[in-house]
Length: 252
Image (cartoon, rainbow, N blue to C red):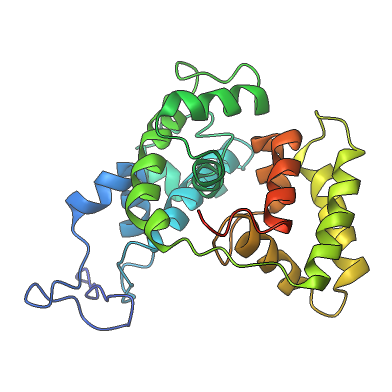
């Protein structure tokens, strides 16, 4: 049987056309993400028409990281079904990155970082012992995160003011986080974020998490807030919450 494949589609589900300029080239992808992520995107579901536009890049990067991180614990037969096995011709690295691409993008947004050294300062605190030498893939990701944020996230950031009910919830979250040790991990922080949501928005938890990103980061969605707070640091996260609550981010 011959190899069948489908054409790529743009974000609206229309066929990509050079004349329309509605596509994403290989060169453009590799400007904002590593080759491994593109290999994964091409590897998955070759017979299915796939949407190829800039918003799919972060997801592809993080899916690649997940496949690599799961590989070592899998049975041999299962490893053969893991895309990372084929991407690396059987020589899968022990670990890709302790920090997801989505988290890096949020870190760039919150810290206003303009170079990778700033990002590595946060990473070093979050994952002691992690360096550019021990995790070269993560080091590459910091460059890609800065570029992707600059060209696609920053131009579309839109902060909004917190509602009265959201301000009350943010005050509650602030008190909960200030009671935690600075070394609290992402799961511990996420527990408090969830508890705050249950206390104030039990009927609309999704809206609570969305509000956190819209008010504090100018985006409508993101990774688990607890993981972001652990990476950014509790003290800085609390300062960010205060700024968002008080409307000080609206001019950014």
